[in-house]
Length: 59
Image 1 (cartoon, one colour):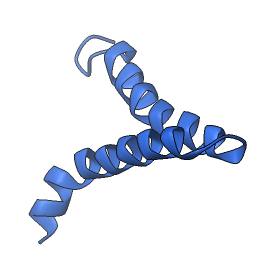
Image 2 (tube, rainbow, N blue to C red):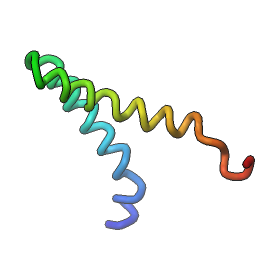
Image 3 (cartoon, one colour):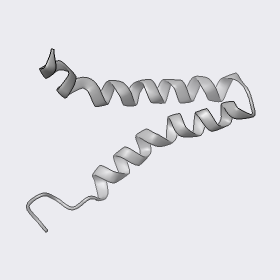
Image 4 (cartoon, helix red, strand yellow):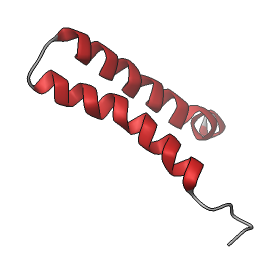
């Protein structure tokens, strides 16, 4: 089970965050907008962090 979680844990978490953000954006206004921004912004932030961090061997 540890191998499954280490391989698929983050993609599943990012997928759940994205789906939650999309549903929250469709449900209403007010605090739903904040939930939507967080849910849709976290996967983008993780992707940007991985895209712009220096490579391990090129410091």
